[in-house]
Amino acid sequence: MVHSMTNDCKDLQEKILKLKKERKALILAHNYQIIEIQEIADFVGDSLQLARKSAEVHGYEMIIFAGVKFMAEMAAILSPDVPVYIPDPNALCPLASYIDAEKIRQKKREYPGVPVVVYVNTTAEAKSEADYICTSGSAVEVVESLGVDRVIFGPDANLAEYVRSHTNVEIIDIDQRGHCYVHNMFDLNMLIELKEKYPDAVAIAHPECLIEVQEAADLVGSTGMMVRTVAESDAKVFIIATEMGLLHQLQKHHPDKKIIPMYEGAVCRQMKKHTLEKLLDVLENLPSENIVTVPDQYAPHIRGILERMNKVKGQGPAVAIEAES
Ligand code: SF4
Image (cartoon, rainbow, N blue to C red):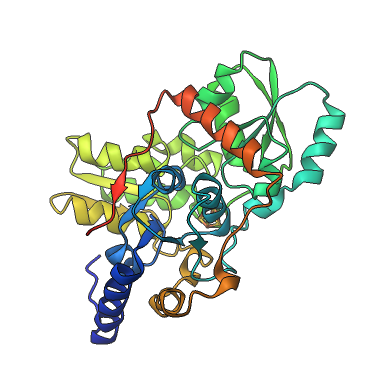
């Protein structure tokens, strides 16, 4: 997984870094972002880590969020005093589009009094109807913390199944069809073949993967858990079932370890809509159509349920990032 940059690419990166300083811009990039953007970002992480970073920024006058739109919406909610720009406003997560506010209201009418837990991969509009938010890493803890017999859950049916198999709580899907097309690309045969080839490898699957892949993997966990496991484990070879962008981070930070993608075609086209050219355009022209906003009626509720999730996980506030002087 050696990545080489062209001269054009380096020129663009240099222009962005120069203008970023002048504009006092913070660039946040998701783990699934194109490598050229990861390389110039102030911080690369998962959706929750990026939301936390955006909540604690000081000395910046704008945030450029290279991720899909629901992630930029969280940044806009948590950092209301700083404009949040997205390089391509059409970078939408197809998984998030499986549920909307009306579908959730419909389930609430069917199951009155049952709490609604939504995965962070949802629009702000859908989150406004939820009682709790979870990430793939916190879904089991959030559901268990409620002390109830059943919850309404969505949009990812594979993550719902993972929670079902790790709790005694009845999980009512908001939409059973909900899935991430990228994580659904991994199949059991790919894993079996790789395990035969690398018998000492530790296979880690994301909980958005198909259930048979989760069951055959050595570990199941979020991208954050994958990062921690590769860092802390004595194992030298890892088979990773998640979007290819994360593998760049893993290999970069652990050159002594072998990071094997379960499938090299696992690429999120929506995440890859962002380019260096679009990022530079935001910095040069500050286009108003690239500013991500969340209607005022949603923001306080979503901020409240995000804080509630943080308490469940027992995690402290985000780490502060100071702008370079
Ligand atoms: S990888 Fe899947 S869940 Fe993540 S943004 Fe792409 S489609 Fe959505």
